[in-house]
Length: 82
Image 1 (cartoon, one colour):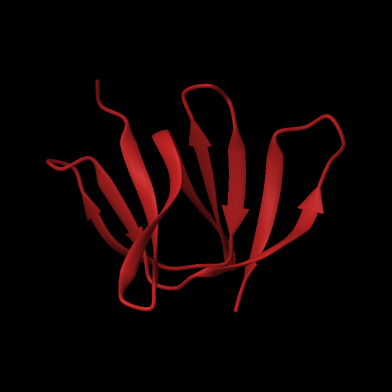
Image 2: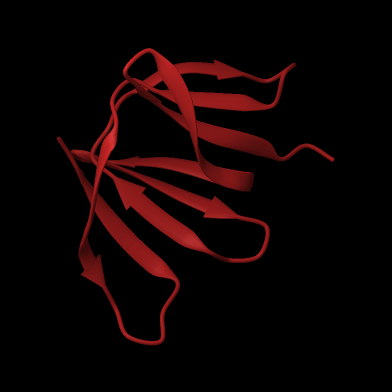
């Protein structure tokens, strides 16, 4: 399997953001992340590291717990950085 796991770096600790990532797309100020199940999340972040060998994506900052935009019945979610 070639999927990756996405983490947010917060307070010098890696926090799991999404498993089984198969798509990472920069969209202006946001990064769109989609996993193999079709779940999609968008965050305002920068990719700090992307390790193809370790299947690991690390974003440079954390996200707030509040969801900015969630379409009802949809798996798409947006998050805003603190």
